[in-house]
Image 1: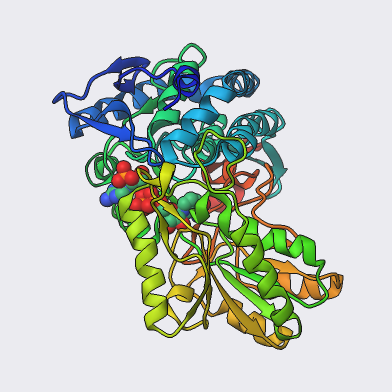
Image 2: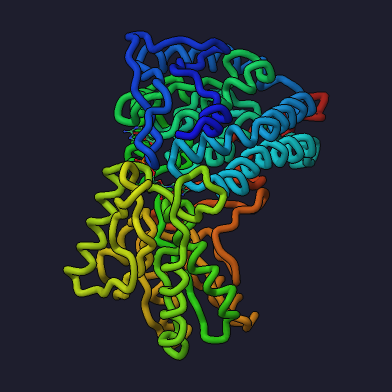
Length: 498
Ligand code: NAP
């Protein structure tokens, strides 16, 4: 690693757990190592939280809850704004840490991950300051007051693809609503969360935000099983999503689940070709395709197919692969060897099922790529029933297919168990609206891709999840409604006593 990068990251060799405003080692002293997937270099040691540690974090969050829940919303909003300022003040460092910890290009973490993170805190600070309780008259002689109250201690678990960004989607609304948190990042990418805890340590009261690092199967499972957790908020695979949903059901607590995707990108022959090409690229190559929202199935109208496909191939061949810290790098490493082999396995499987690889398809091991997990941008020409078109590959691999009519492509787009996002490229506004309405997913882009503006709900239909984040509706998922009815009668209730 070059000295400038190491200096900018300024990492300690070892990080503890952040519980009740203090840094502590794991109760059994165990740690795990976190590496930069792009270079194979060790970044730091992190504590592996035990059941006792998770219990301590939950107890700290329970203790902090009453005071935090009663903190006036104006004060909570002020604190959220201070957190946003702290993230922004540390943006270059956090962007580099995130890039190195997940192996992604610094230009993406600089322009997307970190601004999204501080943007979320500002957004919810603004929202919560404007929240009003609702006072309504009900039956004659009675006032009814409806208020929203926080849920208590929230267990939050996030994946490795956008640690701090997805973390902020959960932490900001939960805190805004008056909850306290026990947070677990992925063991592959814990550093940005730990640095976040460090830089906001003086802003939040002790116990309001706690971080337990460790593996999903141990630390994560301890969170799911803990009786003191009042809500689970999980982002990750649909497979683990089932486990989270079952844990929530057993305790009858709510769960927000942001899960996998296999989103369709639909290209009609009247689209702006340049924008469309950018759409295909952004849709699958951003963050090496390790994006739940990736448009990993691309449907191209038959009347433009033969002309458009070679243009996509050309574009993908020109992608600049490189090391994460280089601002010119467009694509870097996937997260680890397991993910790398899984992606290559899907490509091999596609060939066996009769698909054609139009470009890429291989791991790069030449020169500076030798120690990382770099996969070439890959285009598979296949059909909608092939495994590569049905399952989430979570890599820089797009499956392209041909369609004839609008009706046909809507059916193809919806023929999948996921329903997270989707995109439609056309200059016909009527068609854009028809398709956007007909595709079964939580978000549809029209002539754009992969954007995620603060304030616009994010979440899935079908097996892509339950609940919404990023927008005002997230506050609903972090609160419960209490109705208070107030009698105005001096005497006894008439119908009961007569
Ligand atoms: P994952 O394997 O499901 O892991 C997600 C998180 O859950 C990690 O922190 C993981 O910890 C933890 N975990 C694993 N097993 C657990 C268990 N038994 N109990 C509790 N926690 C457990 O997913 P991933 O591979 O990290 O992320 C990729 C997936 O996330 C993809 O499917 C992607 O589509 C999805 N995703 C969805 C969204 C969305 O908003 N819909 C956004 C981003 C990603 P460790 O990593 O430490 O084991």
